[in-house]
Length: 587
Image (tube, rainbow, N blue to C red; front, top):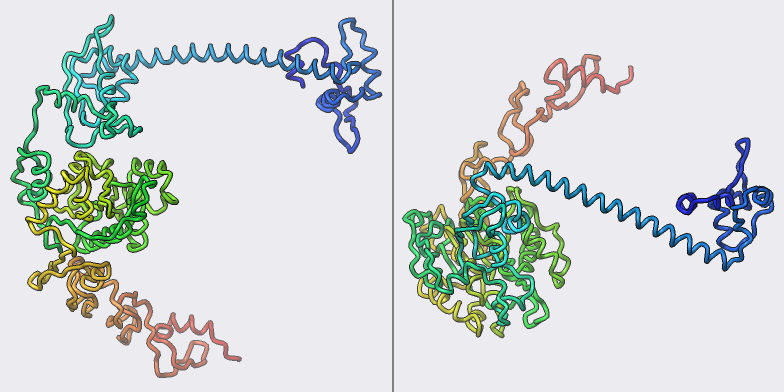
């Protein structure tokens, strides 16, 4: 009320002024405090002026004073609307002035910041920025007049983003003279939110075709690096056959150690178990529970061979499968979690048909006991020693979705350094009308090298002459390779003198961890035992005080005797005094 009448001005507020004296407060019915707000509400509702207030209003000797209480209810409402409109206009005018002043100060601040940034950039020889940042601060960067622009991963950058980073001749800047694009147009294209705008859709918009790709496809002169330093030769043969026929191997990749515990460094594990919801075309993201379980079991087996968690990665073309794998990993491997990147998590949360995208099954980066689970799209540019890939698609229709795209398959096959294991249905891949030209040559390579199998071939590191053991089901891994090795008893002597109770295990060969798990009776003698009694606890427990029960009576300092005490309770005078304090004999 006070704010309203302060805007309107004049002495109208006197109609609702309450005059209290001597510290008293005026009360109405039900002990409601009578103040300006109370009277104003009564006026709006068309009520009469309280009799006690009339005297204080009518005696006001001011020819300009307007008695609002004499207005009818309709007149009051009209007056109230006029006041509100006037108050709103006043507030809008004030807001516009404040907003105008804010814009002026913001522009002034931006100019000051730009001057500071310009000073910094003037002394820089190289400026680094994302394509988005280069477009956003184009005016600032143009002041530097960089004549050479270099774009890394140009195959993943849309054409408009590259062009926006170039400068033209202006009053305070020079034009870009040299543009260097570095990338691979045969891997993933830039991401475009709408499928209808992509080249694969066939609509002709082709917004996901980078400037890099367009120039090369137009016959623009380019240079290609022909030596790869990542993959062992047998893995590089796949992309050599598919994408890079002139690709050469650096000599170092031929010296990679073989994958421990597996009969081959590269496998296609073929199966015929259909994907979840096979035939349901309304689902945009796919999953395959069978492959998820098998991926987790293979990863578990590799960890038992002694590989660090950071050396193994699980890849899949669908984010829905990532969630399925992370849940399966939490269920089957209690001490291992799935690490999913922020990009994949954001994609998961945007998927409307992913049931309960609960992120509690994944962890953040930096956890030493986490396995990286990633989509192919968000793993481009990265690598891992061993890659286990779930292809997901398995159906009778030959529908393979993303896997029909050569660029995505190229990324999939070029991430592994030492070992690569694909899980999929070769029949589905061959049935695909749009993707069989991609997969038929690859599957032929696996067949010709004997690397397409229906069971995972495992080898005991410690007893390689025992031959290959094939694991088809999850139970096979647990039965045939319980600890990563074979089923022979370890029987190695632990530091405590007992035999190792585990089956053959490639890890912890020094038995530091195994010793802590020994449950045999302890053979040690407690440190403070004066009689050299054997410890009564288990080997993996601390000996602590001697719990041996003495077959004798011992006289306490209080004069009473105790029968069959434990050794630690009477081993010295101090122990006897403590025991005497607990004596309950009557004197």
